[in-house]
Image 1 (spheres, rainbow, N blue to C red):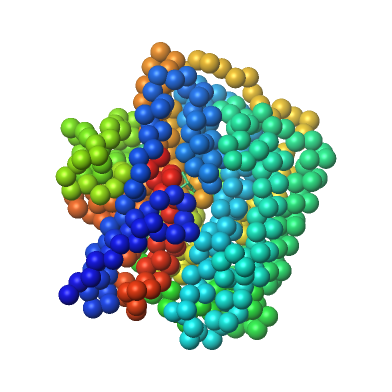
Image 2: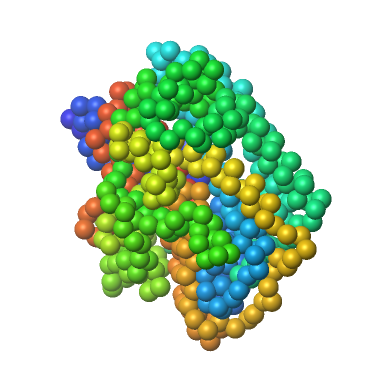
Length: 483
Ligand code: NFE
Ligand code: MG
Protein backbone atom coordinates (compact mmCIF):
# COMPACT_ATOMS: atom_id res chain seq x y z
CA UNK A 1 0.00 0.00 0.00
CA UNK A 2 1.24 3.47 -0.84
CA UNK A 3 2.65 5.44 2.08
CA UNK A 4 2.33 9.23 2.29
CA UNK A 5 5.41 10.98 3.65
CA UNK A 6 5.45 14.68 4.45
CA UNK A 7 8.77 16.44 5.04
CA UNK A 8 7.83 19.72 6.67
CA UNK A 9 9.79 21.82 7.20
CA UNK A 10 12.49 20.60 4.82
CA UNK A 11 15.77 21.44 6.56
CA UNK A 12 18.95 23.20 5.36
CA UNK A 13 17.41 25.30 2.59
CA UNK A 14 16.43 28.95 2.36
CA UNK A 15 12.84 29.54 3.48
CA UNK A 16 10.02 27.16 4.31
CA UNK A 17 9.27 24.17 2.12
CA UNK A 18 6.87 21.29 2.53
CA UNK A 19 7.39 18.20 0.42
CA UNK A 20 4.80 15.46 0.24
CA UNK A 21 5.62 12.19 -1.46
CA UNK A 22 3.61 9.06 -2.02
CA UNK A 23 5.82 5.97 -1.88
CA UNK A 24 4.80 2.54 -3.09
CA UNK A 25 7.15 -0.48 -3.06
CA UNK A 26 10.05 1.87 -2.27
CA UNK A 27 9.35 4.08 -5.27
CA UNK A 28 8.01 7.64 -5.26
CA UNK A 29 4.80 7.57 -7.29
CA UNK A 30 3.84 11.22 -6.87
CA UNK A 31 5.22 14.37 -5.28
CA UNK A 32 3.97 17.79 -4.22
CA UNK A 33 6.09 20.83 -3.53
CA UNK A 34 4.51 23.54 -1.39
CA UNK A 35 5.60 27.06 -0.56
CA UNK A 36 3.93 27.40 2.81
CA UNK A 37 3.81 31.12 3.44
CA UNK A 38 2.55 34.28 1.80
CA UNK A 39 4.89 37.27 1.81
CA UNK A 40 3.28 39.81 -0.50
CA UNK A 41 6.13 41.87 -1.97
CA UNK A 42 4.10 42.29 -5.16
CA UNK A 43 1.32 43.85 -3.05
CA UNK A 44 3.70 46.36 -1.45
CA UNK A 45 4.91 47.84 -4.73
CA UNK A 46 1.92 49.45 -6.52
CA UNK A 47 1.54 53.19 -5.96
CA UNK A 48 5.18 53.70 -5.03
CA UNK A 49 7.92 55.61 -6.81
CA UNK A 50 9.66 53.19 -9.21
CA UNK A 51 13.11 53.79 -7.64
CA UNK A 52 11.75 52.29 -4.37
CA UNK A 53 12.18 48.90 -6.09
CA UNK A 54 15.93 49.23 -5.51
CA UNK A 55 15.41 49.29 -1.75
CA UNK A 56 12.38 47.04 -1.34
CA UNK A 57 12.88 44.09 -3.70
CA UNK A 58 16.34 43.02 -2.42
CA UNK A 59 14.55 42.29 0.88
CA UNK A 60 12.76 39.42 -0.86
CA UNK A 61 15.71 37.25 0.11
CA UNK A 62 18.65 37.13 2.50
CA UNK A 63 20.88 35.18 0.14
CA UNK A 64 20.25 36.75 -3.29
CA UNK A 65 19.50 40.39 -2.44
CA UNK A 66 22.15 41.58 -4.91
CA UNK A 67 20.49 39.61 -7.70
CA UNK A 68 17.12 41.24 -6.99
CA UNK A 69 18.89 44.62 -6.89
CA UNK A 70 20.49 44.01 -10.29
CA UNK A 71 17.19 42.79 -11.79
CA UNK A 72 15.30 45.83 -10.42
CA UNK A 73 18.01 48.20 -11.70
CA UNK A 74 17.77 46.62 -15.14
CA UNK A 75 13.98 46.97 -15.23
CA UNK A 76 14.30 50.62 -14.15
CA UNK A 77 17.02 51.29 -16.74
CA UNK A 78 14.72 49.97 -19.45
CA UNK A 79 11.81 52.08 -18.19
CA UNK A 80 14.02 55.20 -18.24
CA UNK A 81 16.08 54.46 -21.31
CA UNK A 82 19.02 54.98 -18.92
CA UNK A 83 22.65 54.57 -20.01
CA UNK A 84 25.47 53.26 -17.87
CA UNK A 85 29.21 53.98 -17.98
CA UNK A 86 31.51 50.98 -18.61
CA UNK A 87 32.54 50.74 -14.96
CA UNK A 88 28.86 50.27 -14.05
CA UNK A 89 28.74 47.05 -16.09
CA UNK A 90 31.86 45.59 -14.50
CA UNK A 91 30.84 46.59 -10.97
CA UNK A 92 27.34 45.09 -11.28
CA UNK A 93 28.74 41.93 -12.88
CA UNK A 94 31.26 41.62 -10.09
CA UNK A 95 28.60 42.06 -7.41
CA UNK A 96 26.31 39.51 -9.07
CA UNK A 97 29.22 37.11 -9.68
CA UNK A 98 30.39 37.33 -6.07
CA UNK A 99 26.89 36.60 -4.82
CA UNK A 100 26.56 33.59 -7.13
CA UNK A 101 29.97 32.20 -6.15
CA UNK A 102 29.17 32.67 -2.46
CA UNK A 103 25.83 30.99 -2.91
CA UNK A 104 27.24 27.98 -4.79
CA UNK A 105 30.00 27.51 -2.22
CA UNK A 106 27.52 27.71 0.67
CA UNK A 107 25.16 25.35 -1.10
CA UNK A 108 27.76 22.64 -1.60
CA UNK A 109 29.47 22.75 1.78
CA UNK A 110 26.75 23.92 4.14
CA UNK A 111 23.53 22.61 2.62
CA UNK A 112 24.22 19.69 0.28
CA UNK A 113 27.35 17.79 1.36
CA UNK A 114 26.20 17.03 4.95
CA UNK A 115 23.65 14.60 3.44
CA UNK A 116 26.55 12.54 2.09
CA UNK A 117 27.59 11.89 5.69
CA UNK A 118 24.20 10.24 6.31
CA UNK A 119 24.46 6.72 7.82
CA UNK A 120 22.66 5.40 4.73
CA UNK A 121 25.99 5.75 2.91
CA UNK A 122 28.03 3.86 5.52
CA UNK A 123 28.94 1.18 3.01
CA UNK A 124 30.64 3.56 0.56
CA UNK A 125 34.43 3.22 0.41
CA UNK A 126 35.02 6.90 1.27
CA UNK A 127 32.33 7.24 3.95
CA UNK A 128 34.71 7.86 6.87
CA UNK A 129 36.54 10.65 5.00
CA UNK A 130 33.24 12.14 3.84
CA UNK A 131 31.98 12.17 7.43
CA UNK A 132 35.13 13.78 8.71
CA UNK A 133 35.05 16.53 6.06
CA UNK A 134 31.35 17.19 5.44
CA UNK A 135 29.47 16.64 8.72
CA UNK A 136 27.28 19.71 9.28
CA UNK A 137 28.78 22.39 11.55
CA UNK A 138 31.98 20.49 12.31
CA UNK A 139 33.43 18.87 9.15
CA UNK A 140 37.03 19.91 8.45
CA UNK A 141 36.20 21.11 4.93
CA UNK A 142 32.99 22.77 6.14
CA UNK A 143 35.03 24.90 8.56
CA UNK A 144 37.46 25.95 5.82
CA UNK A 145 34.58 26.70 3.46
CA UNK A 146 33.07 28.99 6.09
CA UNK A 147 36.30 30.95 6.12
CA UNK A 148 36.35 31.11 2.33
CA UNK A 149 32.74 32.30 2.41
CA UNK A 150 33.78 35.09 4.74
CA UNK A 151 36.23 36.31 2.11
CA UNK A 152 33.42 36.58 -0.46
CA UNK A 153 31.51 38.73 2.04
CA UNK A 154 34.54 41.02 2.34
CA UNK A 155 34.51 41.33 -1.45
CA UNK A 156 30.85 42.31 -1.33
CA UNK A 157 31.62 45.00 1.22
CA UNK A 158 34.46 46.36 -0.90
CA UNK A 159 32.56 46.47 -4.19
CA UNK A 160 28.90 46.82 -3.16
CA UNK A 161 29.31 48.80 0.07
CA UNK A 162 27.47 46.17 2.13
CA UNK A 163 25.73 42.81 1.90
CA UNK A 164 22.92 41.88 2.03
CA UNK A 165 20.79 44.69 0.58
CA UNK A 166 23.47 46.85 -1.01
CA UNK A 167 22.20 50.33 -1.80
CA UNK A 168 24.88 50.87 -4.41
CA UNK A 169 23.11 49.20 -7.34
CA UNK A 170 21.34 51.69 -9.64
CA UNK A 171 19.98 51.81 -13.20
CA UNK A 172 22.86 54.05 -14.29
CA UNK A 173 25.69 52.19 -12.54
CA UNK A 174 26.89 51.88 -8.96
CA UNK A 175 27.16 54.59 -6.31
CA UNK A 176 30.03 52.59 -4.79
CA UNK A 177 33.37 53.20 -6.46
CA UNK A 178 36.80 51.57 -6.45
CA UNK A 179 40.22 53.17 -6.19
CA UNK A 180 43.64 51.59 -6.67
CA UNK A 181 43.84 50.56 -3.05
CA UNK A 182 40.39 48.89 -2.90
CA UNK A 183 41.00 47.25 -6.28
CA UNK A 184 44.28 45.79 -5.08
CA UNK A 185 42.57 44.53 -1.94
CA UNK A 186 39.76 42.95 -3.97
CA UNK A 187 42.28 41.20 -6.24
CA UNK A 188 44.07 39.87 -3.13
CA UNK A 189 40.85 38.52 -1.59
CA UNK A 190 39.77 36.93 -4.86
CA UNK A 191 43.19 35.25 -5.12
CA UNK A 192 42.82 33.88 -1.60
CA UNK A 193 39.44 32.47 -2.53
CA UNK A 194 40.93 30.93 -5.64
CA UNK A 195 43.61 29.40 -3.44
CA UNK A 196 40.93 27.69 -1.34
CA UNK A 197 39.30 26.33 -4.49
CA UNK A 198 42.58 25.00 -5.87
CA UNK A 199 44.01 23.53 -2.66
CA UNK A 200 40.96 22.16 -0.94
CA UNK A 201 38.09 21.95 -3.36
CA UNK A 202 39.77 20.89 -6.62
CA UNK A 203 43.20 19.59 -5.69
CA UNK A 204 44.49 21.07 -8.97
CA UNK A 205 44.71 24.51 -10.55
CA UNK A 206 41.61 26.28 -11.77
CA UNK A 207 43.00 26.19 -15.32
CA UNK A 208 43.68 22.44 -15.19
CA UNK A 209 40.13 21.89 -13.96
CA UNK A 210 38.52 24.16 -16.55
CA UNK A 211 40.50 22.42 -19.33
CA UNK A 212 38.60 19.18 -18.65
CA UNK A 213 36.04 19.19 -21.44
CA UNK A 214 34.51 15.69 -21.49
CA UNK A 215 33.23 13.00 -19.16
CA UNK A 216 36.12 10.74 -20.24
CA UNK A 217 38.65 13.37 -19.22
CA UNK A 218 36.79 13.92 -15.95
CA UNK A 219 36.99 10.20 -15.13
CA UNK A 220 40.67 10.17 -16.09
CA UNK A 221 41.28 13.16 -13.79
CA UNK A 222 39.43 11.27 -11.06
CA UNK A 223 41.58 8.15 -11.49
CA UNK A 224 44.62 10.16 -10.40
CA UNK A 225 45.03 9.49 -6.67
CA UNK A 226 45.98 13.12 -5.97
CA UNK A 227 42.84 14.62 -7.48
CA UNK A 228 40.39 12.01 -6.24
CA UNK A 229 41.24 13.06 -2.68
CA UNK A 230 40.16 16.66 -3.13
CA UNK A 231 36.66 17.59 -1.95
CA UNK A 232 35.40 17.51 -5.52
CA UNK A 233 37.18 14.19 -6.19
CA UNK A 234 35.59 12.73 -3.07
CA UNK A 235 32.20 14.02 -4.17
CA UNK A 236 32.62 12.37 -7.56
CA UNK A 237 33.48 9.05 -5.88
CA UNK A 238 30.29 9.35 -3.81
CA UNK A 239 28.21 10.24 -6.88
CA UNK A 240 29.39 7.15 -8.74
CA UNK A 241 29.25 4.71 -5.79
CA UNK A 242 25.92 5.92 -4.43
CA UNK A 243 24.30 6.29 -7.86
CA UNK A 244 23.69 10.05 -7.73
CA UNK A 245 24.16 10.01 -11.50
CA UNK A 246 20.95 8.00 -11.77
CA UNK A 247 18.48 9.95 -9.63
CA UNK A 248 16.76 13.30 -10.00
CA UNK A 249 16.05 13.46 -13.73
CA UNK A 250 14.37 16.79 -14.47
CA UNK A 251 12.10 17.86 -17.33
CA UNK A 252 15.09 18.09 -19.74
CA UNK A 253 13.90 21.47 -20.93
CA UNK A 254 16.13 24.33 -19.91
CA UNK A 255 15.93 28.12 -19.97
CA UNK A 256 18.36 30.94 -19.38
CA UNK A 257 17.77 34.70 -19.64
CA UNK A 258 21.49 35.23 -20.25
CA UNK A 259 23.55 37.19 -17.74
CA UNK A 260 26.46 39.49 -17.04
CA UNK A 261 25.74 42.32 -19.48
CA UNK A 262 28.86 43.68 -21.13
CA UNK A 263 29.41 47.24 -22.42
CA UNK A 264 29.37 46.07 -26.07
CA UNK A 265 25.77 44.85 -25.72
CA UNK A 266 26.68 41.15 -25.43
CA UNK A 267 26.40 38.98 -22.30
CA UNK A 268 28.97 36.63 -20.75
CA UNK A 269 26.36 33.84 -20.45
CA UNK A 270 23.95 33.57 -23.39
CA UNK A 271 20.16 33.54 -23.25
CA UNK A 272 18.35 30.58 -24.73
CA UNK A 273 15.92 27.72 -24.49
CA UNK A 274 16.90 24.08 -24.93
CA UNK A 275 14.60 21.10 -25.32
CA UNK A 276 17.02 18.74 -27.03
CA UNK A 277 17.71 21.52 -29.54
CA UNK A 278 18.85 25.09 -28.90
CA UNK A 279 16.13 27.61 -29.59
CA UNK A 280 15.86 31.38 -29.32
CA UNK A 281 14.41 32.68 -26.06
CA UNK A 282 11.34 34.93 -26.05
CA UNK A 283 10.10 36.37 -22.74
CA UNK A 284 6.63 36.86 -24.25
CA UNK A 285 6.16 33.07 -23.96
CA UNK A 286 6.27 33.16 -20.14
CA UNK A 287 3.03 32.73 -18.23
CA UNK A 288 2.37 32.12 -14.55
CA UNK A 289 -0.36 29.62 -13.67
CA UNK A 290 -2.29 29.67 -10.40
CA UNK A 291 -4.53 26.59 -10.73
CA UNK A 292 -3.32 24.99 -7.47
CA UNK A 293 -1.76 28.11 -5.92
CA UNK A 294 -3.50 30.07 -3.20
CA UNK A 295 -4.44 32.98 -5.48
CA UNK A 296 -7.68 34.35 -6.85
CA UNK A 297 -8.06 35.38 -10.47
CA UNK A 298 -10.63 35.14 -13.23
CA UNK A 299 -7.83 34.11 -15.56
CA UNK A 300 -5.69 31.01 -14.94
CA UNK A 301 -2.43 31.93 -16.62
CA UNK A 302 -1.04 35.39 -17.33
CA UNK A 303 2.12 36.97 -18.67
CA UNK A 304 3.90 38.70 -15.74
CA UNK A 305 3.24 42.22 -17.04
CA UNK A 306 -0.46 41.43 -16.62
CA UNK A 307 0.10 39.36 -13.46
CA UNK A 308 -2.29 39.53 -10.51
CA UNK A 309 -1.36 38.65 -6.92
CA UNK A 310 -4.54 38.29 -4.93
CA UNK A 311 -4.20 35.79 -2.07
CA UNK A 312 -7.01 33.34 -1.36
CA UNK A 313 -6.32 31.14 1.67
CA UNK A 314 -9.35 28.91 1.35
CA UNK A 315 -8.97 27.76 -2.22
CA UNK A 316 -10.15 24.26 -2.97
CA UNK A 317 -7.40 21.98 -4.33
CA UNK A 318 -4.64 24.56 -3.79
CA UNK A 319 -1.43 23.42 -2.07
CA UNK A 320 1.21 26.10 -2.61
CA UNK A 321 1.85 29.83 -2.24
CA UNK A 322 4.22 29.55 -5.20
CA UNK A 323 2.74 30.36 -8.61
CA UNK A 324 3.62 27.99 -11.46
CA UNK A 325 5.63 29.73 -14.21
CA UNK A 326 5.73 27.94 -17.56
CA UNK A 327 7.55 28.68 -20.81
CA UNK A 328 5.37 28.22 -23.88
CA UNK A 329 3.10 26.17 -21.62
CA UNK A 330 5.92 23.82 -20.61
CA UNK A 331 7.70 23.03 -17.35
CA UNK A 332 11.35 24.10 -17.57
CA UNK A 333 14.37 23.73 -15.34
CA UNK A 334 16.40 26.85 -14.59
CA UNK A 335 19.73 27.23 -12.81
CA UNK A 336 23.41 26.43 -13.36
CA UNK A 337 22.70 23.24 -15.34
CA UNK A 338 20.41 25.19 -17.71
CA UNK A 339 23.01 27.95 -18.04
CA UNK A 340 25.86 25.55 -18.77
CA UNK A 341 23.86 23.64 -21.39
CA UNK A 342 22.65 26.81 -23.09
CA UNK A 343 26.22 28.18 -23.05
CA UNK A 344 27.31 24.87 -24.65
CA UNK A 345 29.86 24.36 -21.88
CA UNK A 346 31.79 21.28 -23.13
CA UNK A 347 32.00 19.18 -19.93
CA UNK A 348 28.37 19.63 -18.92
CA UNK A 349 27.11 19.22 -22.48
CA UNK A 350 28.97 15.90 -22.68
CA UNK A 351 27.74 14.85 -19.22
CA UNK A 352 24.13 15.61 -20.06
CA UNK A 353 24.39 13.59 -23.27
CA UNK A 354 26.09 10.61 -21.63
CA UNK A 355 24.49 10.63 -18.17
CA UNK A 356 21.22 12.58 -18.59
CA UNK A 357 20.06 15.11 -16.02
CA UNK A 358 20.54 13.92 -12.45
CA UNK A 359 21.63 15.02 -8.99
CA UNK A 360 25.23 14.57 -10.16
CA UNK A 361 25.00 16.61 -13.38
CA UNK A 362 23.05 19.37 -11.63
CA UNK A 363 25.65 19.58 -8.85
CA UNK A 364 28.59 19.46 -11.27
CA UNK A 365 27.06 22.31 -13.29
CA UNK A 366 26.81 24.46 -10.16
CA UNK A 367 30.36 23.69 -9.08
CA UNK A 368 31.64 24.20 -12.61
CA UNK A 369 29.98 27.60 -12.75
CA UNK A 370 31.53 28.58 -9.40
CA UNK A 371 35.00 27.92 -10.88
CA UNK A 372 34.31 29.57 -14.24
CA UNK A 373 32.98 32.66 -12.50
CA UNK A 374 35.93 32.92 -10.13
CA UNK A 375 38.21 33.05 -13.17
CA UNK A 376 36.03 35.50 -15.11
CA UNK A 377 35.63 37.85 -12.14
CA UNK A 378 39.36 38.66 -12.10
CA UNK A 379 38.91 40.01 -15.62
CA UNK A 380 36.00 42.24 -14.59
CA UNK A 381 38.08 43.68 -11.76
CA UNK A 382 40.92 44.38 -14.17
CA UNK A 383 38.58 46.27 -16.49
CA UNK A 384 37.39 48.67 -13.77
CA UNK A 385 39.05 52.04 -14.35
CA UNK A 386 39.13 54.13 -11.15
CA UNK A 387 39.63 57.32 -13.18
CA UNK A 388 36.39 56.89 -15.12
CA UNK A 389 32.79 57.39 -13.84
CA UNK A 390 30.91 54.58 -12.11
CA UNK A 391 27.50 56.19 -12.24
CA UNK A 392 25.55 58.16 -14.85
CA UNK A 393 23.13 61.03 -14.15
CA UNK A 394 19.96 59.70 -12.49
CA UNK A 395 16.51 60.51 -13.83
CA UNK A 396 13.07 60.45 -12.25
CA UNK A 397 11.19 60.21 -15.56
CA UNK A 398 9.74 56.90 -16.64
CA UNK A 399 8.54 56.75 -20.21
CA UNK A 400 7.86 53.00 -20.51
CA UNK A 401 7.38 49.74 -18.65
CA UNK A 402 10.51 47.94 -17.52
CA UNK A 403 11.59 44.31 -17.67
CA UNK A 404 14.75 43.18 -15.86
CA UNK A 405 15.85 39.65 -16.70
CA UNK A 406 19.02 38.24 -15.15
CA UNK A 407 20.46 34.96 -13.92
CA UNK A 408 20.69 34.67 -10.13
CA UNK A 409 22.51 31.79 -8.41
CA UNK A 410 19.48 29.49 -8.63
CA UNK A 411 18.44 30.45 -12.13
CA UNK A 412 16.35 32.85 -14.18
CA UNK A 413 15.11 35.86 -12.24
CA UNK A 414 12.74 38.42 -13.75
CA UNK A 415 11.22 41.69 -12.53
CA UNK A 416 8.32 43.06 -14.62
CA UNK A 417 7.34 46.63 -13.81
CA UNK A 418 4.33 48.46 -15.20
CA UNK A 419 4.49 52.21 -14.74
CA UNK A 420 1.81 54.82 -15.01
CA UNK A 421 2.17 58.58 -14.23
CA UNK A 422 5.70 57.94 -12.89
CA UNK A 423 4.40 55.48 -10.27
CA UNK A 424 4.44 51.69 -10.12
CA UNK A 425 1.16 50.30 -11.37
CA UNK A 426 2.07 46.61 -11.21
CA UNK A 427 5.26 44.84 -10.13
CA UNK A 428 5.64 41.12 -10.72
CA UNK A 429 8.63 39.03 -9.77
CA UNK A 430 9.26 35.51 -11.08
CA UNK A 431 12.10 33.85 -9.22
CA UNK A 432 14.29 30.85 -10.10
CA UNK A 433 12.79 28.80 -7.29
CA UNK A 434 9.28 29.61 -8.51
CA UNK A 435 10.29 27.89 -11.77
CA UNK A 436 11.98 24.87 -10.16
CA UNK A 437 9.79 24.42 -7.06
CA UNK A 438 6.50 25.25 -8.75
CA UNK A 439 3.39 23.20 -8.09
CA UNK A 440 1.21 21.81 -10.88
CA UNK A 441 -0.11 24.15 -13.55
CA UNK A 442 -3.68 24.39 -14.83
CA UNK A 443 -2.98 21.45 -17.16
CA UNK A 444 -1.86 19.26 -14.25
CA UNK A 445 1.82 19.23 -15.28
CA UNK A 446 4.02 18.86 -12.18
CA UNK A 447 6.82 21.36 -11.52
CA UNK A 448 10.48 20.35 -12.16
CA UNK A 449 11.21 19.13 -8.61
CA UNK A 450 7.88 17.29 -8.41
CA UNK A 451 8.83 15.61 -11.67
CA UNK A 452 12.40 14.84 -10.58
CA UNK A 453 11.11 13.13 -7.43
CA UNK A 454 8.56 10.97 -9.21
CA UNK A 455 10.02 7.54 -9.92
CA UNK A 456 12.90 7.86 -7.44
CA UNK A 457 13.76 4.80 -5.35
CA UNK A 458 13.76 5.26 -1.59
CA UNK A 459 15.74 2.59 0.24
CA UNK A 460 14.50 3.49 3.72
CA UNK A 461 11.25 5.46 3.99
CA UNK A 462 12.19 6.46 7.55
CA UNK A 463 15.40 8.06 6.25
CA UNK A 464 14.62 9.24 2.68
CA UNK A 465 18.08 10.66 1.88
CA UNK A 466 17.62 10.20 -1.88
CA UNK A 467 14.62 12.53 -1.71
CA UNK A 468 16.66 15.10 0.22
CA UNK A 469 19.46 14.99 -2.34
CA UNK A 470 17.13 15.33 -5.32
CA UNK A 471 15.41 18.37 -3.81
CA UNK A 472 18.66 19.92 -2.64
CA UNK A 473 20.31 19.47 -6.05
CA UNK A 474 17.97 22.28 -7.24
CA UNK A 475 19.14 24.52 -4.37
CA UNK A 476 15.62 25.72 -3.53
CA UNK A 477 15.00 29.09 -1.94
CA UNK A 478 11.44 29.27 -0.72
CA UNK A 479 11.70 32.88 0.52
CA UNK A 480 12.24 33.84 -3.12
CA UNK A 481 9.73 31.32 -4.34
CA UNK A 482 6.80 32.83 -2.42
CA UNK A 483 8.09 36.42 -2.28
NI1 NFE B 1 16.28 33.50 -2.37
FE1 NFE B 1 17.09 33.71 -5.38
C1 NFE B 1 18.52 33.12 -6.26
C2 NFE B 1 16.25 34.63 -6.56
S1 NFE B 1 15.98 31.88 -5.85
S2 NFE B 1 17.80 32.84 -3.54
O1 NFE B 1 19.41 32.68 -6.63
O2 NFE B 1 15.63 35.27 -7.20
O3 NFE B 1 14.47 31.97 -6.30
MG1 MG C 1 5.64 36.68 -8.53
